[in-house]
Amino acid sequence: MSMKLSLKEALARQAEWRDAPPEPSDSRTPNVWITPVYIPKTISLAKAMMTFGVRLTVAHDAINRLAARETIAMAIPGDITAIAAVLEPYGVTVTAYESADMPASLAR
Image (cartoon, rainbow, N blue to C red):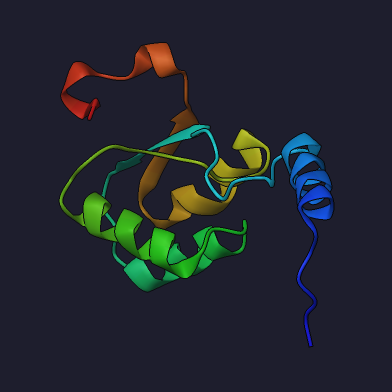
């Protein structure tokens, strides 16, 4: 059973929450460009993305956009050369992401 806090206790608890560091967000800054070349096995590519910690829904969205011949920016944790070594056999080109390199047509 919860007890109702006094005004003083409630204000003290609010100050603790305000001063606490923010929770890390689920979004990350993109670090790779992925360009489709020829993707014969989309499910294998999605599984390879998931080995780097990419969620299934994010991998699915990426596969749909790559199938539409879009170049996409993704946040995949890890070293870019390792990411490229794993993903490029599945028919994509992986390059390092620099925000200044973003084509105007891809800016949303």
